[in-house]
Image (tube, rainbow, N blue to C red; front, top):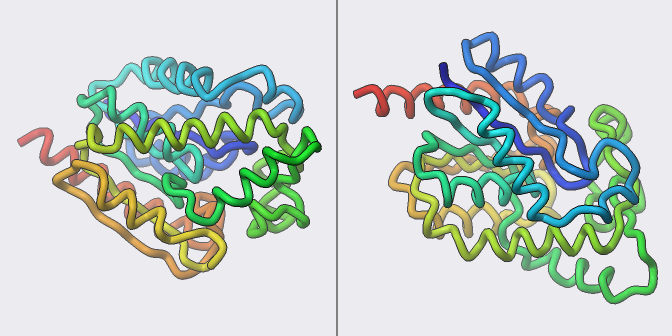
Length: 241
């Protein structure tokens, strides 16, 4: 049995992957998509946890898959979680990242501005958000995205990204990097940075020109599902040779 662990983005829920999981299950894969600590309840609950708690939850979810070999899928800030795991689990068969954030040339200034402000909460999944302006109303409702998040929790996400960047050279599994170019405020340099800095011999980059960065629920999702599944099977073929 082959397993796929899905890691959702910050401030969101594992509903990001409901359709993706169903698709892979129909193809014979076992899946697991944990709800990360502090998510899916109330925004203030995020203050109780650090990025290390999200990593521990991800590790446990990986163990719970209980499969012969496993793959990882991480979306937006779920991507650095997946890459962090991959660095310490060389037995993993492959990684898919969806609009992963690993380099912060544009977000860095915004995040630091928020962290210096007196407000304890930051606008997140709302029309006024400067960090996530690409979420429309239907997507926000579908994935139960928080409308605001605590500054402390946002800082933990920033720490996760910084720590993951230090580990990229330890990531040597096959990797498929998807990135949406439809939103100019979502820097495509993330994808190129990741492609250049992992040690994977088998690596592939696809730039998608339609839909939001939340690729698992937007208009390009079916293409992403098919491409990811084909990538998984190609990795399995190599494994079984």
